[in-house]
Image 1 (cartoon, rainbow, N blue to C red):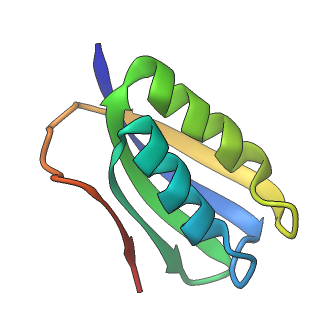
Image 2 (cartoon, one colour; image 1 turned 60 degrees about the vertical axis):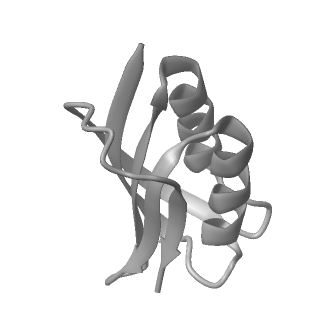
Length: 91
């Protein structure tokens, strides 16, 4: 079954290769959507894919890459739309 989640990760998440690591993992897991930096040291992402793959990328987001320090994560499940062709990093 496919699912879609909207995620906001807070903490030391910018300038630590978080977005590029997410893009790599999303590609491996065949997840579509996007990730981008937002104000106040946050990162926002939309993930669409099968349950197991989305759960795996969420697990990664809770810790982040080695240099990151995740202080909070908000995960909102949304209705799956299948609107993305691939996964992208938005600047």
